[in-house]
Amino acid sequence: MATGFVKSERLRKLPPYLFAEIDKKKKAAIAAGRDVINLGVGDPDRPTPKPIIESLKRHAENPAFHQYALDQGSPELRRSIATFCKARYGVDVDPDSEILPLIGSKEGIAHLPLAVLNPGDLSLVPDPCYPVYRSSSMFAGADVRMMPLEPAHGFRPDLAAIPETDYARARLMFLNYPNNPTGGVADLAFFQDVVARARASGFVVAQDAAYNEMYFGDPPPSILEVAGAKEVAIEFHSLSKTFNMTGWRVGFAIGGASLIAALGQVKANTDSGIFTAIQHAGKTALDEYQTLAPSIRALYRERRDAFVDALRRIGWEVSPPGATFYVWIPCPRGYRSTELCGRLLDEADVVVTPGIGFGQTADGYIRAALTVETPRLLEAVERIGRLAL
Ligand SMILES: Cc1ncc(COP(=O)(O)O)c(C=O)c1O
Image 1: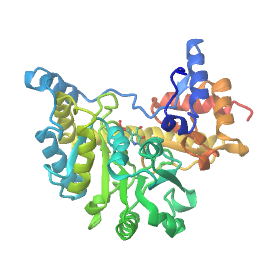
Image 2: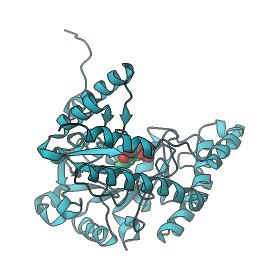
Image 3: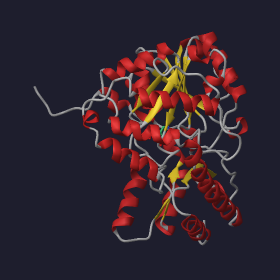
Image 4: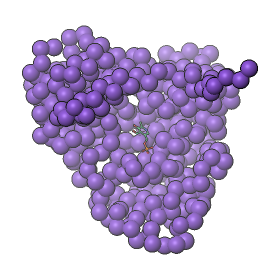
């Protein structure tokens, strides 16, 4: 007998949404008129720089851009991406076959598993991580094996600790450097080891470089700087954080032609590209990278230093992130992350994200995003300092 709607198995298999409770409390606090300081979301608070907005305005007037975009993205944007990759990383990527503009990097990350995984394959996913790696692997029917990111390993997976049996089954490994949520960074030597492993075992490496331009030390490398990487690696880049453009939805993938073509094939059957005027505005952003990105980086450096100093002054042990606008804070006094986040919200009106939302290994951490102005960051710490934790 017919019954009501039942959610698909694949949705029911997803891990519970662990931010739900804190989200509900946050909304209730705001609705009650409390002065909430929200360090919970990784969404830049400053507006998109003027030249990018002006570029969108100009290009939005062009009637040719009101029609469907090209599946492979506009040639002008792809050429600018190639120029950017050469200047920033010294990497040659062919605009016609090794670049794919994306409706935000999330879209490409979510679609990639459909291009490379068969049901029952193994996908290696970091723990903690941006949750999309896991859910998209599961949507493709893959088994997921989590790779713990330990502070002792600089929040990089210990490649030697992954069993050979897992390498033999793995068809995909997700990496994310600079890392959300830990702020960890990877150097070229690590990428060289990963690429060597991937080539030996026959898996694809998906490196999520969404935060590559938000750094405070040496500029993070591209995995494509490793010789031979294009055969096994695809790298996801985002304009969202680099240029305060999260709402615009523009990013890109770079990699070997066959990987890019496979991802393109999934996309061609799923979406119809990015509004072409936005692609041209994205081109303006990349063309102006040298003038726009440094001041955004400087802003987060100032906030990072002020916030970390203030936390240390109230006795919290915290390391400044080498990159990203996230501060990954070990919970003081043995708190579990949800309990601590609950108290900070209930008693200090400060929203931070519980580590457990990013993975089982992260329950001893909370994540604060540097997405409010410095005086508000300092006020958040002052309020936290007044609590008897
Ligand atoms: C690690 C990571 N990758 C990808 C994304 C998605 O960014 P985009 O706006 O390019 O889709 C985010 C967004 O927060 C992120 O934190």
